[in-house]
Amino acid sequence: MEEGKSCNNCKHYHRYYVRSGVGFCLLNKGHCSHPKRRRGAVPELCGHWEIDEREEQRIYALKKNLEEIVHRLTHIITALP
Image 1 (spheres, rainbow, N blue to C red):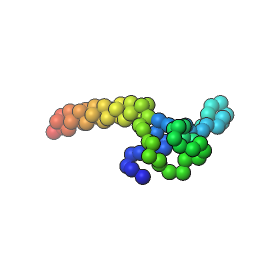
Image 2: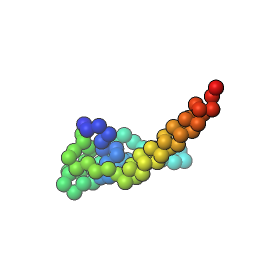
Image 3: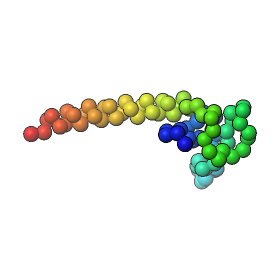
């Protein structure tokens, strides 16, 4: 499997949920909705993987947060005797 790519972060993959108490919980199962792929369980990463835009936004936000952490730690380090 290519690094960073999985069905869980593909825009065609739909995870299943189950009602639990007052909310819903993600299951470790789902299906692929790509038109050229058969319906059903997804055993492994196929050649139709595309990044989920929401995943792309989360990655961008994470990078920005890490940059801010580095910036603040740099200020802390320079303030130390």
